[in-house]
Image 1 (cartoon, rainbow, N blue to C red):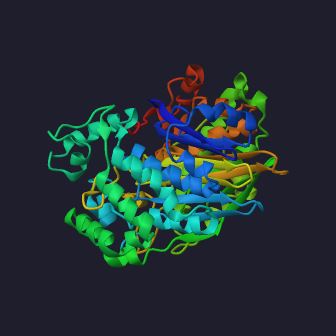
Image 2 (cartoon, rainbow, N blue to C red):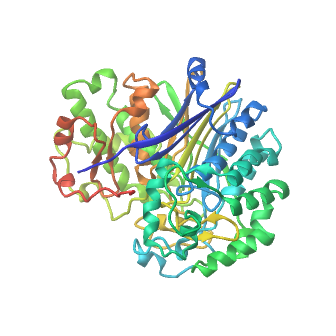
Image 3 (cartoon, rainbow, N blue to C red):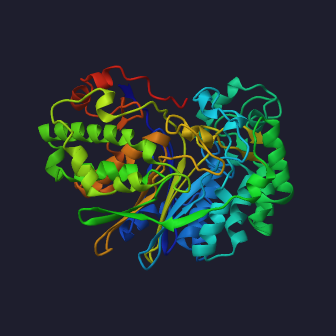
Length: 525
């Protein structure tokens, strides 16, 4: 058992027609889940939160996708430890017609990589060898070409200005800078966050991204190809290879975004749309499908029923962990088993294996070795015209690979680490599995919409599932649903509790062999 500390920075942006909620979180407070509800009263309450320039994108008539792209670009300055141009993202987009599309720009395995890379798991996970081919900008390009409204360059202008002028170093980023103390003073990444004397910046100090601003300006004016071909690409590859990475110009030039239909899942009166593999939508669906079979309602979180509900929920999450190996890139592996996870038949079968008064050792759940991954950033956008975007972006671990390209201003991912514990081998071009689950739910009449997702790496599944259950079945409003304390089930089936979690329920959940020897939670600081 381990306590999870909670902290969040939330920024809200509003125009006359679009509500955007961007939450940048560290190991939970508002639950690292982002949400937006089609609620005009909520929109009025958010009008006081207008601190960053990309709100102008919405006020200029930008679409929900325009707003999401601008929000993510801005977040790459505020949360450079979690996401940026050196990573990848998944967009789940609902059109006016109700059709839901997924745009997958996850990183891919480069054409050349260390043959026995997975034998290094999880040692030395922040090195150049773990860098995947970044897809972030290509993802923005495809999303904008399909659903954008404003000119491409317009989305970048306020962020370029902010990068040049600088921002006051945020509280959360300040805490993560402690991780850079272990790096030598000559480390390019450490230099980025240090003053002229080589001392790490502190909270409130002015932080500028001059080189990144130059890169963004070229991308804005010349288009996404500028990042994947030409001078920026050559400079990026040189810096990566100098740091021990294997990326090549051919990798960048050949990168392709994947566009597909979202997978639908029925949750009572709501339809939920989840991203297919290699995203984690199927795992989230599996947990919720198991839980909906218990006919949950507000009485399920009262008295002894609450204890029983949490016990069943924890067990469902343990069974879900055992099925994460089914989440693979469908271009290289069958997604049949993953698709089964979205269906009631499998959930019904597994529910029959859940005991109401005991839990079990790992073998009962067919659980294998795995590793937890932290990080990511999520953005939710809901427009008055009915369009919506749920987008999650990441460079994987905190500061990714810790490889910084001084020529381009880009921090590179360590996304290949996501194969650890979930794959026996990897192939060039393959996308690693992910827990990211940017989802959109709406009622049968589409009068109610919930746009939700999370940061937090492998804790995303349990976090998002809790928030959805709280709102859909337990009668909690959005604020309550998201802020309610959560028990997380990590990849080793150990329980991690947020500090405010009910002490009695915590002791009840932590009574079994499966949790008594739980390893410490992955610490971010």
